[in-house]
Image (cartoon, rainbow, N blue to C red; front, top):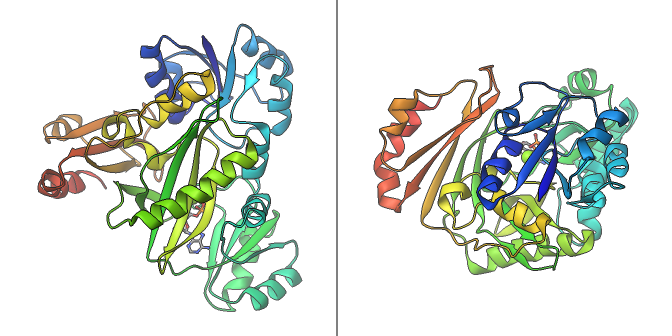
Length: 361
Ligand SMILES: Nc1ncnc2c1ncn2[C@@H]1O[C@H](COP(=O)(O)OP(=O)(O)O)[C@@H](O)[C@H]1O
Ligand SMILES: [Mg+2]
């Protein structure tokens, strides 16, 4: 079976690394040459509106998937004539625009921060009054790793934020003073079989994920059920196939949805060593129409992102329980260039945690 992947970044690379042992073959599509996945499998380098290149890409593929959600909808619609496309187009559409995304969640009874669209300066002033400060102004599209966002704490912050972001359609959200951030990764097969990994706890700095603690500590059965109920509702509504992620804020024992990602997710990288079946393998099992694998965690994991540059390989590998993932990307400030997962019994993790944290900037 040959799988086409739109996007050839690290998520694509890890999909291929999980799929090759299953006997799957891969072809990637990405406008950027020398991307992380191209070291593992063939890549078509062309723009997403190059119909000839897309036709060449689709030749001989059985299934097509995507590893990031900013693929133009027209590209996906065009490719659907050649092969099955998973996750479904509706999921992609819903997640591309933060406004559509939040409306989808709201319609399904999944709690979100208060939000509204902002199209003009006057609308920003009115919406800020209605929602109240602090609030977060975000571009509706193309934001990631905290890019395209500004926190508005006082009335004086409005002008500056409007100047930076006002050129794009925006959404204003109430600021949630959460106790912590959690995410849930689920996978749904073509036969509707659905499984959920345990909730994990995510720590961000400057809008970028730094650390995932898996499974999240102090999660009651009720909290896990609450999260699964929300994600399950979303999956059923979208007739979803593949891995779907939902990010939450936890506040007073209640989960407030922040955003969804119709793909494998950074907060699921711990599953490579830390769970019986990784999110990457389970995504491929789902879209390929194979039985899903166990989502059971093997033990506890701490997943650290390497931001800007990689730590020294031999130093990391000397730490018991540490697993290194180098995406083969050029170092650049604020760029995710790799990750490191520390796996083991909780007391082992505590013993080696500081060593690892000193290696990560
Ligand atoms: N409404 C909000 N209230 C409080 N914090 C927020 C809110 N929205 C975003 N954040 C913070 O900013 C981070 C990045 O925002 P998010 O909407 O998830 O965008 P991205 O696509 O960049 O991940 C979140 O993980 C959270 O820490
Ligand atoms: Mg996010």
